[in-house]
Image 1 (spheres, rainbow, N blue to C red):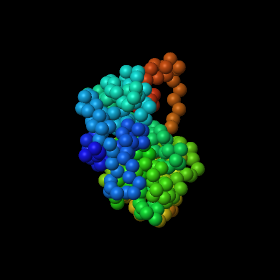
Image 2: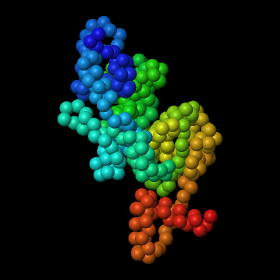
Image 3: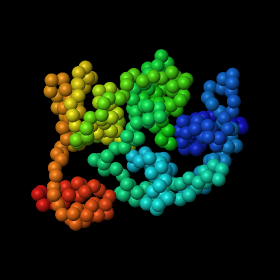
Image 4: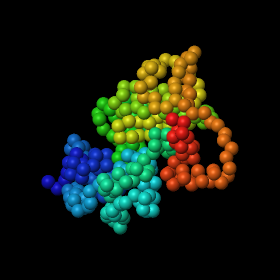
Length: 317
């Protein structure tokens, strides 16, 4: 045969079917036209697939920048910047016509992880969970007459699209909107409240409460007052301190208690009360001492507050 099916191409290249779809859109491989839909699955010309496979066999083994970005909760652009300034060791590999990509070995990844992996309490950037171009949020619920349930997700290349749980497939955002007629189940914006502290929750992907809780947060709190960061087996959720309505919700605060990492959640008169474990305070210190603390904190890539808290804990504890 002079062609491979999408499934065969994905298996040979060691990528997902969605990535094969993007390779065709980028012109790396040729999709064979089938206007009369004679074949059940999309086909791709054998020559380009074999060439890509051959190139990958000769390349060093490891992870692509997009994979490292997802594991560390950073943007691909940030990973490329760290590669270019030497923070992340990577090997150059050819990528299409006159283009260069990178491979990060397992050893180099572990080194970078120690330096760059976001801590539990590091600030989550809005771009991690909200796409302002599409005006959608990570794991937001969509549906249509054709699809009962779809969730906004990103693939391994960090492209935005939809996961269709019933068919166990991922589709690009444009395809979901145009071909599957997907529409949001709820709106995701609310007025922003002042940031005076946060509660942190770490919820496994397998927890039944995950999606109901996310749906509640988007509808009631809005993307302006929460944060979501993907990790390998769980999701970190931050919630601004404050009070919001908590009625007709398919779970209880007790269901959330096992996943709270810092802060408290309470119910009072149909309100969810969110309280941070921290309280802001003002300390007057000599400028010279503050400059020294800042330098020591910068050397360890932590905030001044984190450095002071750690050092005080050594004395108080």
